[in-house]
Length: 305
Image (tube, helix red, strand yellow):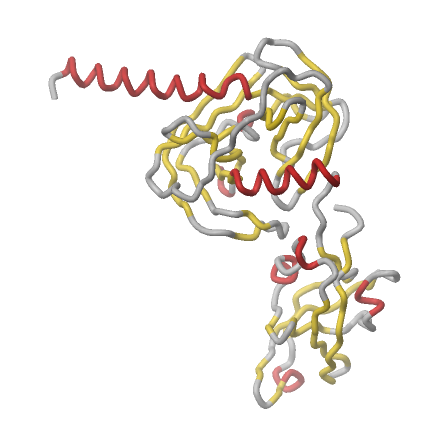
């Protein structure tokens, strides 16, 4: 390709990427709180701003810095640490509703722009989708509709901004991932969780009222004709008014089965305590003084996160 044509193609690509950021710039805001210089957010609906829950440490003294340079106070509507979504409300925000696009067609290799906002103006990073998988549970037990990793370096001040596909569609919120990587909280998760936060101020989570720690079980103690349960979760505390206490669970019991499935980590139990679990009755098996017992427990709602 002649140098002139190559330069023109590169300029066209550059202009296109700039246009993608321009297309969402009016929806992007910078956010300041008492404990952090700034992070990014975006206007989901008029007067409602979404940002990254983990990055917004304080619930008070939050200011939204709009693209025109003006600042307005924001109040907390609700936050869900399990999906890393927080919803804020501002009294005045003239920007219209943001149309979030579905991520079903997104796949590895697709081009993505991570657009954020600093007090000085919009910020952007360019990369590709390095992984586009199915649903997964976060470390804190939240259901994320798709696992989307980006091959780009995300400015911490751009966390909470938008991921934009090559068509200019907003497909989710960019957050910092493990080992400095970037993840996308997909549009489907944002719409579902933000709606719950708007209606209830929180996302319901299942609750056992038990403090659990992993433990190895003596093979002889755990022996059963059809099973070999050598790992479990020992109960280190019992809420005096929780579902576990009402089911008869005691400190020192070892949880080994949940509806006939082995439970070998605290994370595996957390993954079973999503919003849909509240009110369900489950059959659990425990070891108590070497004896295997079966109990029924009705999952409650966590009083606070």
